[in-house]
Length: 122
Image (tube, rainbow, N blue to C red):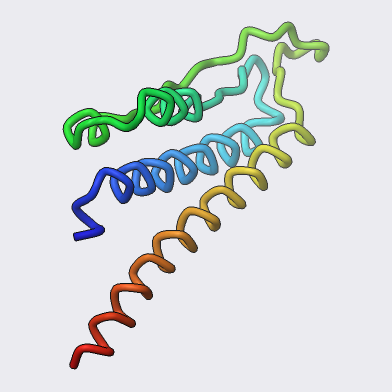
């Protein structure tokens, strides 16, 4: 079944990571005026690329896909020590939203295929 396959698990992990990226970007934007706040980022694309490059992974490995949240050490140009760049965060937020939407569309398309097959056999 599709929902029990590795490809579905990778799509599911991608959706979760894209959602987390949106949350982190939103948090960064909300703290753009907080003195001393350092922006955070989520690294997960390299993890998914590694799984894909290895020719896939077992279900156990796929279910263990997690992102890494890092705090930026970029030197701030602001006197209050905050290093959040609103434009960069907004673009990253939109990118994460676009990835999230594309992955959900892919999952929905796969389920629509199964529904079409099941509907045709009844």
